[in-house]
Image 1: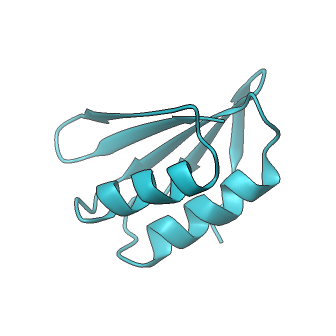
Image 2: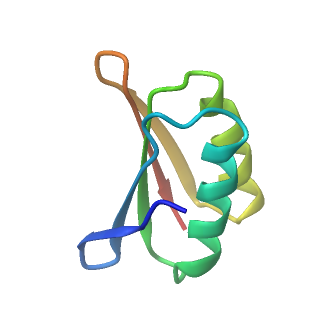
Length: 81
C-alpha cells in the first residue's frame, strides 16, 4: 500500500498516481480508517474513473466534505473527516 504522508496538523496526502481501479478506492478506504476525525486527506490520482468511487468511499467513511480539483490530467480529491 502506498504510504500516507503527513503534510501538516491533521493534514495528510495519499499519492495514487499510476494506480487503476479498484486500487485507488481500496487504498483510500484503508487510509481513512487509520485517520482520526477532523483530519483532512488529499488523494492524488490520474485515473478519472476512480473519482466517483473515491467520493463514494469517503461518504461511507463519514466524510464531512469531499472536493475535487483537476490539475492537468491529475485530480486532487480533498476529504475532510
